[in-house]
Image 1 (cartoon, rainbow over the protein chains, first blue to last red):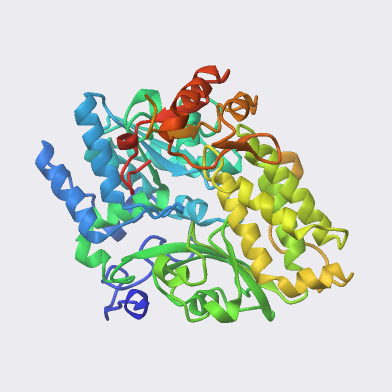
Image 2 (image 1 turned 180 degrees about the vertical axis):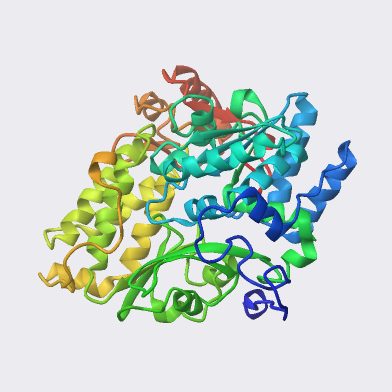
Length: 437
Length: 78
């Protein structure tokens, strides 16, 4: 844990020196980076040489950098690139590349902020991924809030014929599961943004039946920097096991909520401090996302924000969300709201998810309201829903709800006796307005 | 024929019609909403014929038998 959690830093001056942050975001908001300001900051994207060997070498460099997916699953990017390239070679089909800027998580803002501030870094990465896999086009699926900015950046590049492959931009579907790989492939293929059965994996048969690389937009931005500066530079931040930096969204009871960039392995307490520190005594943190894990703040304050560092608390960095719950807010009420939202966001294809999450959400609403409630039945339902969907949506909801039962035992006992710690008006965790759900 | 194979439900295709629950109660039980839970995936030799019948008779073609060697190695990308 100590080794995995050590944050490697090296001294340096200037924004591009090893170990310096931020890497991805251009700093104080000055509008979207233009292509000129992007190139002034990062330099041109190195051309990928012709033939298979230069591609293979760059994929190997990405492997040495240890870059993993920043959409939540943390899968090694080099292995995904190699798998798609291999599937393309084996089948003779031209692969497809999709940059995933869906960000269906209502509390997360890091992909929107990245696309709004540094669209060219993401586009560099998408085009590079197309070259590395042999795709002839890159598709960028952008959250509706930043679609215009991405369009503007693509038009700017098109005017000077900057990219060797065309870039197509789509507005993401506005639902929680829309960012799941097969749902995204369906959406990009003009079908409903709902997951399909696995196998086949999209890396084997995805968009139009092509081997398809689906990569989070932040991952692609890191890829574009690794191509410029190499693996050693990338590894000058982060931990030996989990190198590099990552974007986090810090919300709730902190003084300056928003998106920050951290070296992976930064202690959780320091992540809160980067967001101005707690604005009130904190009773719990929701880590990873709305299908993440509730944790006790004091137990994770010194834990590294990394897969290895959070494992002991049963949590994971996920898509980089940290939501701080202040004293005076009822964790059960927040959990019940999230459970109802996640149940409503089921794609409705699998019975256990459709009916099970609904039953669970109703039971949690009873608990939150202090009415009669059956904890053993709730636990049985959680076990029956866990792992029983075509995608991982039900598993994530189960994980979040189980962690609430672990972290809020005093509150559960209180509610059984007609007492609630909630004294604050309104909810802490944001949800989209019901009309848009 | 299907001994040693692994039983699997495609949860998207499954509509909870319940044929498999009646044909193969030794291996499959319903959850609280009537959808099949496979208690042990590997089909023992004595249930091979029943397992094949359950797969055949599923009106949604949601029940599958996978040969053991077809399971993917861990860490294969999506």
